[in-house]
Length: 143
Image (cartoon, rainbow, N blue to C red; front, side, top):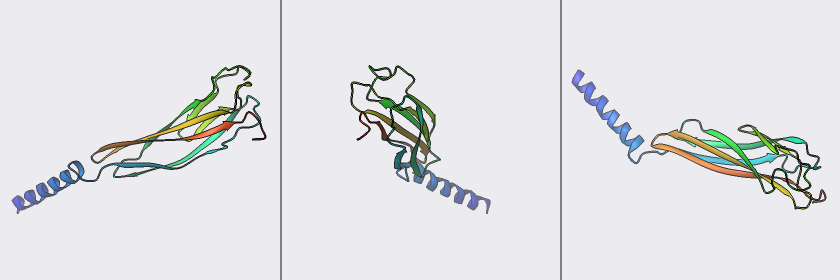
């Protein structure tokens, strides 16, 4: 009887190993529902504005994902006519940033790009995905 239980347990373990590591389900990760609120910062008064970055990171055959944000801009941090204030952004957490409502006087709109990076580990390895959303400081408030 003990031998039969041992054989059955080994067979179950072999089956689980094949499923998890040899062509079985792989960790899958997706990012959806990406938006920024607000997505336009006006007036350009040099104030730091809280912006919420909404998204859903969904996994299948993975552990819970870890996500982080990055920020970049199409204008330099202290460009001509922007008030020489800095820093122009601050990442608070995985869903919140502070962005400065300013743009260079001689240039067009300032466009902040907020990058979202999520990664997860699970059966058969791990997965990572990237997404992004933009927030604009218009040069002309009528736009």
